[in-house]
Length: 511
Ligand code: UN1
Image (cartoon, rainbow, N blue to C red):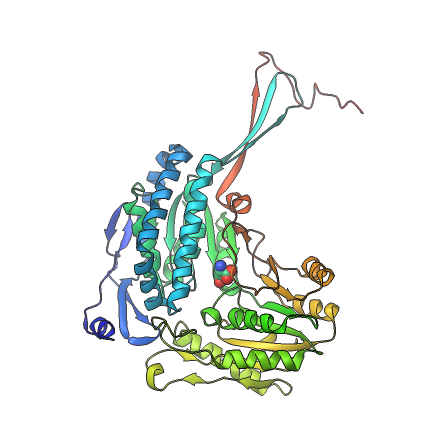
């Protein structure tokens, strides 16, 4: 309490961009204030509202630094990443507190977010001694054929506010280990957590220019990055609408683009499920991080035989959730990110309310009294008897709102599950191994869980989705993320000492 008061009274710190190894003010001098979503009287800090000029400076630095970083042996690059990981471990608690103050998620989850960055950093550092290519026979004698990975060049990373350290790390670490240089733009709601990560990289000895931080809005900084001639790859996580605009701009400017966008994830609860377990998973998936995960369980498709029982268990658990400021250890559900989010989520509650069939079963109100007075708080909200075609069951709400949809059998559950434009994560609760495998095979999503919620993906498995969720890429796992941040080079070495003509001298043994 005393601490909170001190924070309210203190003068907010003015932070700077990090370009070419120096902390610099934005060229235009404009700043954006970031406020604590649990108590908007508290200013977390003032951050640069950068412009195209700052992006220009960042890319100049990234271009200059590129040849040396590329030539640095990958095991040496990895040593820096190991140091980053160690420093993150030491600072985990402070960084988690910073994150809760700027983003709102409860402290336990902020620790998890920092931990995900730690895991990703160590995991990627290990790749410094692999970055495997392969050899393969040539068609010709005395000729050697192989493939190696090369960096793509300069990467622009545009990251969201909901996982403000983990998601930057998913992009940054593979980009660095592959030998790319980087300009990163965090969401304007949560620049501090990304800044903490960048500062840690600086302290770990990352050379100047290899990583540049440009803070500001998508309209200014994001747009300048996706159009910049020196950017070779744009990696974006955020809404489908913005992602598609990023992709259009990237395509127009001839850049590779990796997208991670919306979700409308589903848990299928079968008649043979452990209903207590399913309800717990649903509560965690729907209301964890206040429903602000791409992977949030926003639809629960429940077999009609167990529908009533399941809804009762779900309601009992959801009703007991304590909503409040994330630094209070008793709180389980923090605020939503900002006023715009409140308006959007409450708009969907209204849409749901107006649907004839759906019932607003729990919650549905904005909390405005007492400890909630100065924050963006919304009650955990459950709609029941939702039909799969309704807007609340199809569109991404990104808040603590879940739709419960009845179904007849597994086939119908799968049909409903797949019947949205997104395809990030899905789950089934069942005790029947045949059902589990059938759903696993038939759910067209990038991630699938059995007897576990739709959230909680681990960094060393591919992360990403199908349909409107992505554009075919997967982050996290090296098997897939290296394909985003490096390109293959095929190499032929002819040691015959004479001219050998491929595709002319060779005859197929069967032809
Ligand atoms: C996101 O919401 O964009 O799988 C990322 C999870 C987390 C990551 C979520 N590990 O829920």
